[in-house]
Length: 375
Image 1 (cartoon, rainbow, N blue to C red):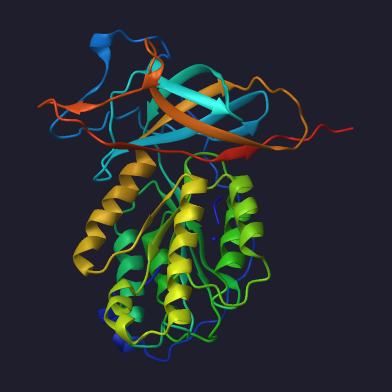
Image 2 (spheres, helix red, strand yellow; image 1 turned 30 degrees about the horizontal axis):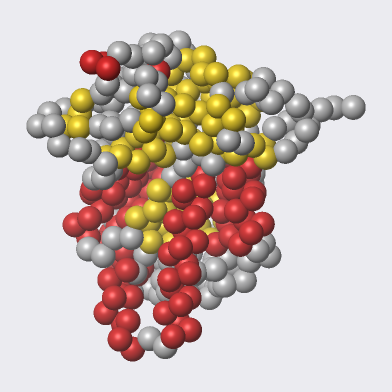
């Protein structure tokens, strides 16, 4: 049973002013039905020069069997890593032969056992900043928060599990993991009048990611936030380390970018630096957990962002390798994923059907924590 609640569209919420519901607390529960099914994918064989990938004019994702689940495991005897390769527009690039992938663990090349392409149901936590710091009732940021939250919820498939967590001075579970969109909407319906003027982002990220760390299958967090942390118990460095160890990719959508742009001429140096630092922290957290960060200025950008997040989460290469370092010492192992031409061992170039170079980005976790031997 999965457990962490969604917001009704903002027009309907105008009729619900002042409605407050008691708080819901409790730990997130490990989802059920997450046993991985066999996948069909590319073997990690060495491709010929003719087999180097060409980018089609319109990307078409290769679908794996229904119910296929990609796993990330941090057993020191076997590591399974989700990897997305996207172009400069954020589109997933399919059809890359397994032999073009190279894994470096602590800068040491690893032997890849298999490379698969899978599409799986999601287990995702929708983490929402909701405080009087920015989201006052009927304010533009309040509307933006509700539009983003409900807009993403509508993109979920029937088999996807979603939880809703709001945070101010502390995180609160509004809806635990469920496939019922009515329950998600019920949880989001509580986001009306913020109680606190604190926004403890670091504490909320670590609390949610560690609750999700034992969940198997494809999982992620989507965080709607200004990026400003006011009073967290955890420091920035502590947060980075614990997010890396939890193994949960995090996708951020930065709030109030338009408001910041309009207000920028009137900002002082300290205030401007606070927001720039917040943006950089979100980018760092996203990169190191294998996620992404988006900073929309216009409502018209929301649909494209949701599509990119959905594509990145559902379409990924699943790479399995046995690490050369077999010590059970509890250390953090850094991972780097590269695309190379095995014939020359140089970075793999990609071109579209017209022969023009295509820039691409590899999205993957920064590493994993090895288990510690039991004495």
